[in-house]
Image (cartoon, one colour):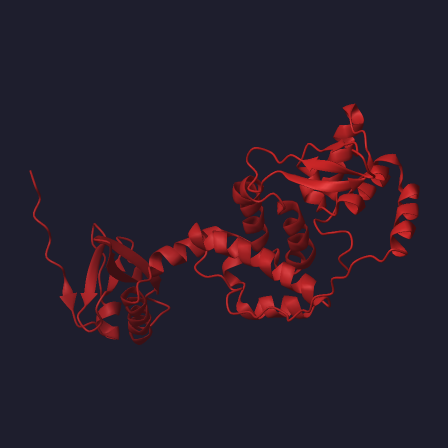
Length: 308
């Protein structure tokens, strides 16, 4: 048997009428005919609370505005009007409030981002995570993620002396909040609208006289580290690329230059590379030494050796 719907109880609310509302065996709503979407909900215990109720994709959404004993009628109407304006602009205030409540602290959000996204999608996630732990967590770790604003982001960047480093931290923080917005964990990304620091290129190439000095210095770093650094110097490849390859060095044919073949893994977006390697760099990388050798590249920042 289908029960008939109860007629909505509507009236022009006043401060006095709200105070005089009596509890009933079941909770009930009294709608305000002055402000669309605003209602006061009365519990069997006598507790009264303001609600803003609107429709989202054909389903009713309830936004809790506050206790009717602490928020007056005029303020409740203002809050309801702001919520209905947000709905008209395509937002969902109830969902945003729920998401912000579930976001937790920024430290918790950063951990969730790493575990649920970064480790699976970003090969250089460790570098970004180190930036977050060094520059963002000490300041925001205990703050609610939803409370971090644009002013906080600018303040953090202003405390980092190196402009390039500040830009890298900004990108790392923005990645976390962009993911959180897509997951409906927070409503906005506070990094949007924050300008990056202007930088200028400082790239240069090692001179012929500098290369031997680097080569000699590498000899003091130990067998594995020395071989890895010399390989970077000889091939001119990024450490990250060398660390994800199975490299082989063909001996030179009729000259002093051989070829180092960089065989990328199957899921890599880049194609296999062949780079020149002088005879002096004819390396034999096999067995346990090969495992330690290629693993070492993962601990080197992914930038060319001669970029200063």
